[in-house]
Length: 396
Ligand SMILES: *Cc1c(COP(=O)(O)O)cnc(C)c1O
Ligand code: SF4
Image 1 (spheres, rainbow, N blue to C red):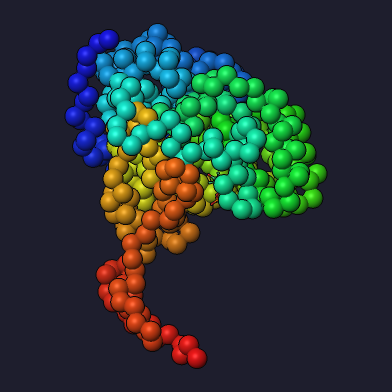
Image 2 (image 1 turned 180 degrees about the vertical axis):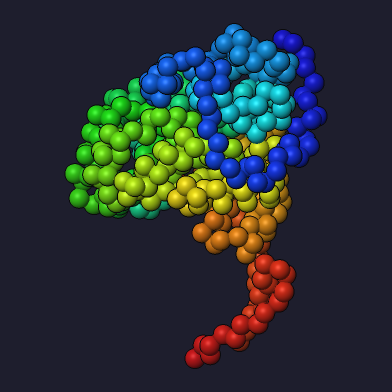
């Protein structure tokens, strides 16, 4: 195999784009596909069929790939597949080696290296599965993996062991087992559809799963985790929204990491979902060279609110094999949280969490805001570092 030194450029802060520019809603345009009829471009099936999946295609569209990326794309065939929708591909700035969109979807040689503490299944999901593809970790809710497909593959994916046909399991056959488990487990009142990306299922399939879940009396609350509004906004059709709105209360968590992902197309898709009465949250992953910076993150959370999306979680990147080049220290995360809390709308501030390696679930990471504890009073620190006293009521 080719020997390539991991680039040192990626240690530097992300390219200096003005915050004003980051907050603008810009269309991805048709870019490399300018000649394609608009009706085809807007067809989500065309977008899926024409994804960039091979080094050949990649080099034709982007002749100036870094050697680390060429090797990365070759190696990806044996690990997490490469796949990028033409729409999302157009957001990459190939003149910028450190483009934050590029780092999320173009494989790099560093993926082939395993750092200490990195695992295949860092959150130990497989051993918390009472039936295949159903994770029951918390008392009252389950995570249901309904497909192994995504519109594009994120290089840091927690489920890279499963998605993109990495595991040759049949998702069809296990659906009955999953639904049967939920039906005979009355403690489950919240079902979270995930994967892979549930919105890659066709309308009929998705509708049938939602119908079967809604037929279970103790299932109160449904949610879908999806990156489709970011990777493939064309999929969010009026027909899809008409189906989803029949299953309320239904929430959707999207996954966006950088303000440039929030294009005109993404905003249109998100508004459509919000207009169908679906409360929207966002889960971001803290990634080195993508969003590990207060200015970028602040622009991002504010832009999410403009799309009627409430930032929900900011995840410390899970220690998945081959992700060291994309992970940051926890200090960086705390610094970003310090830059958000109090400095912008409370609704815009997510909870910063680590999904505890080994299967402990999500653990909030926060700085101690209580400076001194006494029985009758506590001293608290505000976002500017000033101290305040709060008198506690008598305990007797
Ligand atoms: C994240 C997660 C959930 C949902 O957690 P919330 O904090 O309720 O959003 C449920 N099950 C598993 C296994 C999860 O990883
Ligand atoms: S969309 Fe989610 S499941 Fe799919 S590759 Fe990205 S992180 Fe993994």
